[in-house]
Length: 515
Image (tube, rainbow, N blue to C red; front, side, top):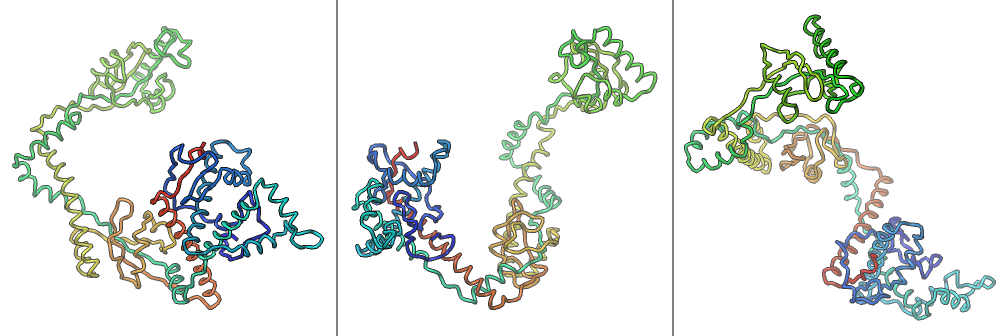
């Protein structure tokens, strides 16, 4: 029996194999309750013990048999370690269920064990189809164990299965709940939404109202000075010139490329002078020539444009020539540089910046105020809107949005709770959890919903509910929900047991398991 199939059976005698421990249906539980399993000190468990659960032993042999049955021989060692930890978690879960069955008082009688063993096909005589003590003893001997240990194993597995069957008892789901769940899952909504954000012009007005008092307050001078020093480079910059260039390199220059590797200096000079003539006398486009003939790869890709330059990206000879360029003198003529011969064309200039704190004091104050004002104003706005949503006061809510110049927008795509995203907006758990409050067009989600980094108000523009399911469909829905709730209950209960055992330090694991 597998929990995934939601089927209840007695012990499957055909699959009874002592070494592989596949008798117990608990093996299909998804073990999610463990946080991070902690290993015991190396000397707290003997070498033959993989783990203990409330003094119940999981032997290394038991773990090895479990892993052998999985066929791990050809797998990498790293994979084996991962699977070994999964296996020990599974075996621990079984021991926990066995112990909890004992705590409840569910023991397995000798008669139950005997009846089970007598029904196992592997122990039946082929000719008489009756239990054969010889075949039974042969099986036990092949497992290299004693009959006492074998009975102990069977008793434990049957005890666990009793506990498991209890956890998997089907939970009843009424037709009313099934209908409501079906309608909830299949109702679609079209929403209008409003982004709760104070517009920049309102923030700017608020800042302007506070600016004079802020500058007059001597206690704010430190924060202004700190902001100035933190952005010193913003207020102190050298003049920069943006240029386009053509480079013709040669074999004896620094870092020649392409044809420049075989070109002589004389040939390079002749080429650059020819290009200069084409630009000055023939009127050819600098950018066009720079794209066709250029050993400066960055310039070649950008029609000659190499952006704003300074001493960090150009040699002194080039910088000297560029410093003489302006809107009145846009062409450099041929420049002999360590990298070859260059032509430069002026594009634009950024003048130097050298502002004292007195020059930018008001601008810094505005920036400080803007940041603080935006945070406080938007918090206040969210509080106002939240209050009106709780009161379901549509008129006052719309008045607030109007005062803050916040428009309603429509999401064209419909939404249901099964959807991962809200139209073109991102996913929002808050919307999914609160959409049940929407009954008809005009209803609001009763709280501001956070979608990524935005705060949004949702209003239903349209609500389309499905018809109630027919009788046959309803029965199927009840069955599906019963299976789902039953499995969730079983997994949650096991998870809770595991957490309790962990908290009470009832689980000990031999560090050798992970080696």
